[in-house]
Image (cartoon, one colour):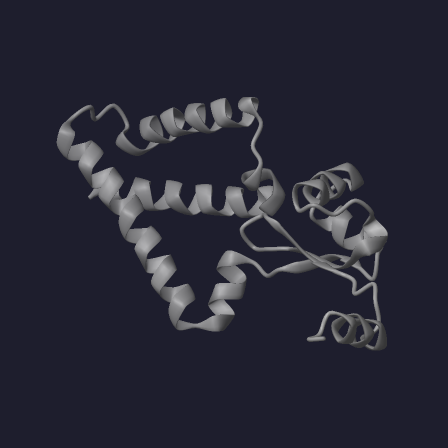
Length: 163
């Protein structure tokens, strides 16, 4: 029972730590951060099993982590308010071609990171972005501005019609 309690405590500590780290850091980890997570895993194992090197102790610890992960997934699926708390909410970082510096600072995003993601999405200029939304999984979604008005599109479609 001691292992289950320690595993529960460590699960909660890791969950809070990862939420504090923010969305962006988890989506695009550097090699150092990957190594850090591996080291954290070893430290967690030592803290959970406390010199218990048995297969039973390791199985109990893993099952406890799995149990709490399933519980949190079920809670966020069942209650929308809990989902916002546990998983976070998408946030607008660009509106009408303008960076929202407060949201970027809050999520520890730099202009160059947003521009890099824009290039991956095939967008050349920030002025072409209607909305850029930092999703709860750390990815940025872009919605481009409409460059032509409705009358221009109608005229172009009429030109391409049957002759």
